Length: 400
Image (cartoon, rainbow, N blue to C red; front, side, top):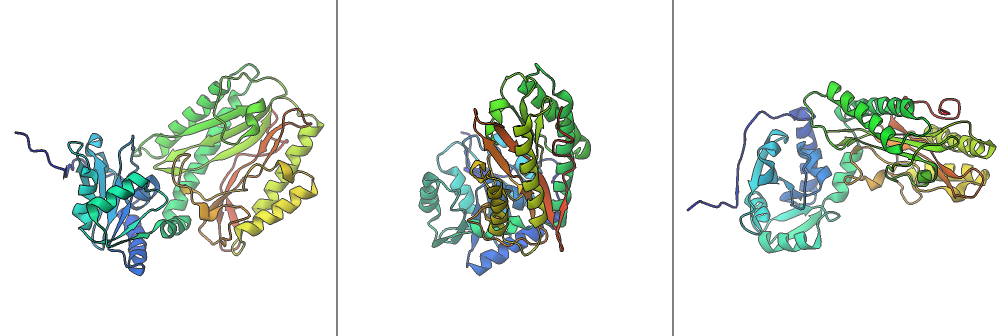
């Protein structure tokens, strides 16, 4: 009879991580300080972004639960058997594998680290109702503490090592932008342009980071009506002269996302297009000048709002003016506490990384119709900001 354990250790191969051990130990030390402050015995982190932030392992869920369990002396990833020893090789600390042979083995593996009746730190914004009930049933915690706000606040303040990786990502995004610009021509499909940018970035990431995992780098390249939304996916629409275009490159390096976004035109824009484009560029430049220590996110937003209102364009603003960068993607990791919106009062600090990305969407049928967006990434410094995006913006550079 084959023994069917609930969990086991499968460790093989050498560890390979985006950062050195000291970086992860520093992150864990700050987490443990938060745990001690809240009387937490063990943190059970279940989101992709926090598991990756504190361990280095970026899991692929496919419907299975994953976790990083942190106590005062341990940091253990809990992963599914389908991953083999990959979680061990790509995580700082220990790794347990749970089996599919019995329902609830994930929580049994978690409980082997936390012990029963502990005070647990969790991510209330990530636990589903079903997993929350399973946690209570198996672990019977004395109480639960929501650590999501504390971990988000920690992730918003980037270390030197993180900022170096983000700088590299921004440079890769610029290379993708150049490949996209070179591929633009009448009759070419959005899809073909997007693939050119994606392939260029994948190759550059592999050149710069030969020991990394390569996944999730993508491009949204939009044209004509498709530019009306920032997150509109790529289609097979063919480009035509007179089109407004939106270039969006997103390199992913070990879970760290960066972005480049630019408005372009295929052929000369008309007077209405040009007026709106130049106004959005001016809003972009104003926003960049406001990103400095001591400014609140809501105050930056109010200043740009006033500028656009003065040009009778505020009603065409689509969303907030920027957001934090770090471990995030289009399906995990948003740091909502550092967004340039009216309802966010976070004060900018040196070491934070934030985008400036005003967007105006003029509805179809109106003069100047289309979506206009520029996007740079800024590192907040002691006396202002450092713009790490190099691809040029505006009508002088981006009429193809």
